[in-house]
Image 1 (tube, rainbow, N blue to C red):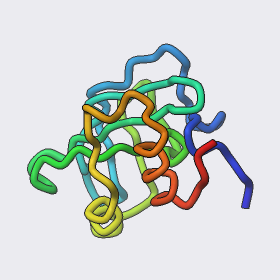
Image 2 (cartoon, rainbow, N blue to C red):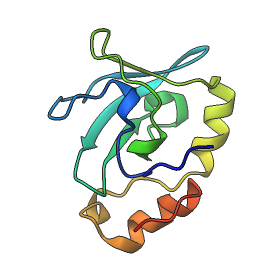
Image 3 (tube, rainbow, N blue to C red):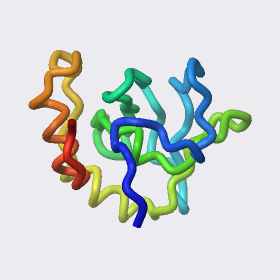
Image 4 (cartoon, one colour):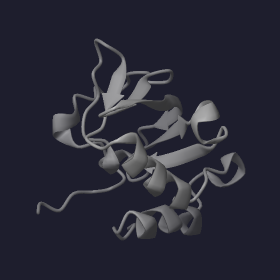
Length: 121
């Protein structure tokens, strides 16, 4: 398994620096799970916030950029290689995104890094 920075977009995702991916649909193998409501490309702290809408009661989940496998800039979709049930299990246990703490507070980012099994530098 290749090591990567969980707080940076992987080179093979198709992400283009400066692109606005807010509103892009996040798609599981068997259907939509929500859309990106915010994203950051800050070096060492890049992430996307997924608004799950009514699917999981409007929960907003912060995903470190390194967890994103692909971004389709043409179709404005972020496909993932999991089913909705697999994602639901992962999302229900993930820390919830908190707008007031997202300014780069190290302990806040570290809880996500721990959840996704990567140390935050």
